[in-house]
Length: 101
Image (cartoon, rainbow, N blue to C red; front, side, top):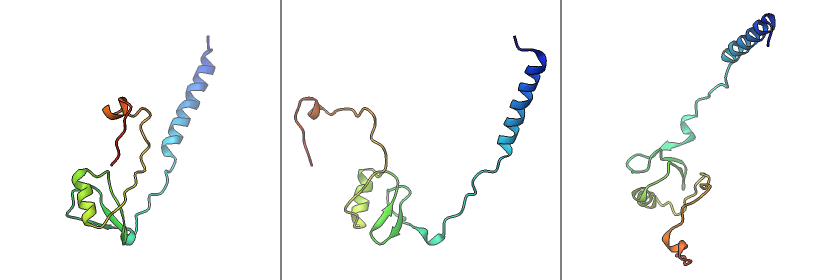
């Protein structure tokens, strides 16, 4: 069993640590320069910005979004998301055959 003075000291130390963590300053958030990227309105692609000629960044496009991007001249797309740990298999790959586009 913990003696009363030890418990009191431990609780005081825990309280001090919790208070000091809340008061610690966080990283300073800097505003991006206005010329960093230009919003591209009028498409179905969310969060679409032009970084420079031929280079855009955006949220994951839908099928309509890919059509809108091709109208802007985008020919390639990259994703920075991680692949799911267990990807569901399609009926074509379950039967042993594969298809490609």
